[in-house]
Length: 151
Figure 1 (cartoon, rainbow, N blue to C red):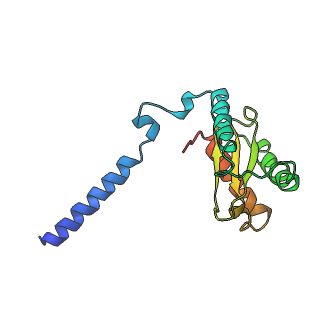
Figure 2: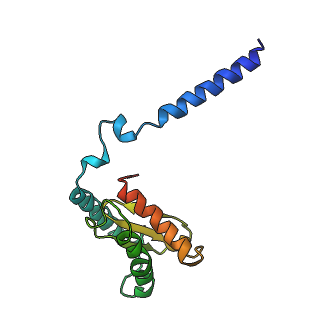
Figure 3: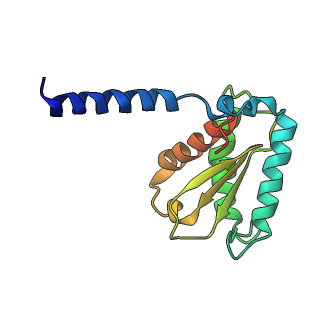
């Protein structure tokens, strides 16, 4: 058998087993699982992380909710709440679901914190075209929170 073919086959098998081995839940590997946290603990953790972020406006310049009430109302009332309360989410009623906007046009991202906090950057908002795309982003982050996926 050709040595090169044997090396390629061995490499492919090694990569396959490496990928399969990495599929194990990280929480299981370290003896912890996010579902060990109650809804109240998740909400407390999320609020603490958010408070820490809000205390660093140089790094996380959140848009003021009073001055930008139209943007918050659109994302919160028109999009997020119908997604949350119109779905059979396990934490639908346990969390105080909130949208938070960070003013940074260079970042086109969104993320979720435990306890129902969805954070979205203005850099991503400027690329979204219509309710469907904005709802998709919010639904994606809601799913992370509801499925207890903490990154």
